[in-house]
Amino acid sequence: MSATPVLISGGTVVTAEGSFAADVLLAEGRIRDLGSGLNAEGADRVDASGLLVMPGFIDAHTHLDMPMGDLRTADDWATGTAAAAAGGTTTIVDMAIQQRGQSLEETVAAWETKATGKAIIDYGFHLVVTDATQAVLDELPRLPQLGVSSVKLFMAYVDTPLYSDDRTLFTVMQLAAQSGLLTLVHAENGQVIAELTAQALARGDTTPVWHALTRPPEAEAEAVGRAIRLAQLAGAPLLVVHISCADALKEVTRARHRGANVHGETCPQYVAFDVRDLERGAFEGAKYVCSPPLRDAAEQVALWRALQNGDIELFSSDHCPFNFETGKSLGRDDFSLIPNGIVGIEERASVLWTLGVRTGRITPERFVSAISTRQARLHGMLPQKGILAPGADADIVLWDPNREFEVTRGNRHGGVDHTPYEGMHMWGAPASVYIRGRRVFDGTDVIAGTRGQYVRRNAQPVKALDVSQT
Ligand code: URP
Ligand code: ZN
Ligand code: ZN
Image 1 (cartoon, rainbow, N blue to C red):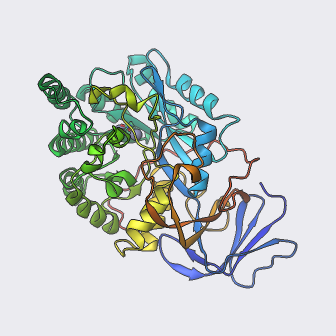
Image 2: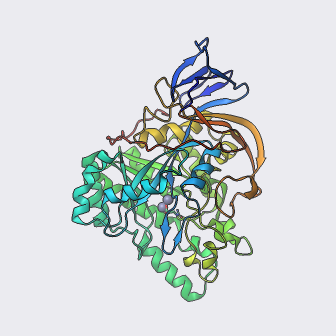
Image 3: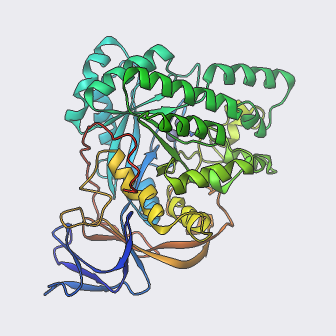
């Protein structure tokens, strides 16, 4: 927390609901006031002329310091949160993955240990249930007491500890519903993908593009439809994460039209890249292996439409980085051994601005909604995070809409040995980032000294068809 109040003046405030000229006064870690002619005696003054003043960005889908078989994601909580801050993100919600035999409380404690002393931005955890024993099911209703408001299940990754069958999915959804928890699903038909993968490898089809060809849109759409029906049966609110294609999206849209409490998220990789990137030479395609996979470019039209009309509410990174040399390269002779996951925690907002706002596909207000306000709302962080209002945490991004830059590994702030966005020209970047009133990024460098805090998220029934942008 900054000891001296800060007055940000001369900027244009952009919220999920509108844009207007206003000054913002930060004091004691919170937003004290918004408007003009504020009493700011003794405050440090920050000139935000030409900048947009936005609530700190929230990325509720990250995988920091995550074990995956013998590997571990290439960003820990120090490098990952530094990269996040440099992209304007002031809060993340990371996937805390239960290990076999671990209780849910132990899982949260294990993730807290990873974050403590390293995180420079605020954070919460989703609880990824992988071992739903009776004891774990009995414990699930107590998650809200730990400040956890969501559980996550994987319908993909058969033959790994992550996979959940339909019975597990349904049982956890029922309990989650009773406990006010939001259920998140990775929706792909894992059984079908396992068979298609085996068939491809048997034919000698081993290159990275086969990762996508063995995980077709139908496998995603089927699982999304199934997850929605199970959630409806269980009376559970559902968030379908990382939607990649029109058919999967259609399942969400149709369900919302019949009143189902279903929400959607997509990620930068599905609008910035397509299946052709998996065919890059020198095994570079491996950098683009993530699940669901990159799709035909034509699929992006539907994703943009849904981002603008609100059928997709969230734009999160699903940052799940593996180094090229020591991770991705394990699959040189067999695409199924390429660790799944792509970089994006730092690039997320600039991708959405460059490809979404600058092109006129979405409004600046939608940008704020998808990247901050709606994230806070669905994930139980309102009114502390995601809004610019008196009393909210003073998490602020001063966004320079005209900052032009080329992404390159050299100007990244994380710990990964590559960026899939290498060479991409972008517009829009943070000129300054504040967390609870303290400056954490100055437009070039991450400023040491901030300590990220755990955000206790509120479990609550999530509203179904609320069409407001917040
Ligand atoms: O490829 C991906 N998305 N890896 C991260 C784990 C997940 O499925 O979210
Ligand atoms: Zn996933
Ligand atoms: Zn993920």
